[in-house]
Length: 203
Image (cartoon, rainbow, N blue to C red; front, side, top):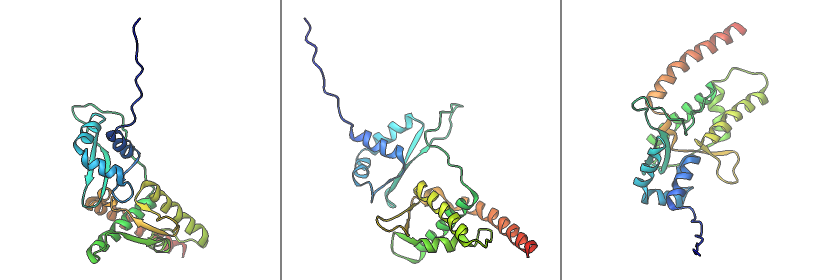
């Protein structure tokens, strides 16, 4: 009779912890201390592993974040996307551009690393780019919808216990670069001209 020994199932490896955390979204040094430390120790293994899935692990040591992005399609082989592209509304794009510009100004004028904005500051930033409304509550609700969308995307974070305060996450710099801003500024100028023309007709 052959004695078959049962083996205990192994728990998740350190590599699994890092990859799964990255699959769920950006990894931050200040909020994911253990996975971040593991990532730094296993960086080459993580890169090799996710590359099989058509992904690249981007790690910014100075800013303290890491994320996954899709590798360029090579030799006509196109894999299903694991990192989904998120369609953005125009006003959400405006908010991202305004936050990116505010971060650039902050970095140029402050030695601090964390840009904190109140809900009221964000409302005032975005208010100028929304069609005028006689219903103030509806206008603010519209702005809150865009703020919440950016929170879901991981570019804004509410500190615990402070619903009306937001930290602008530095990973925004990786997604909204100078070329994106330049292209968007051109579209924004056209939008503002149309908005002013519309207000003139209504007046």
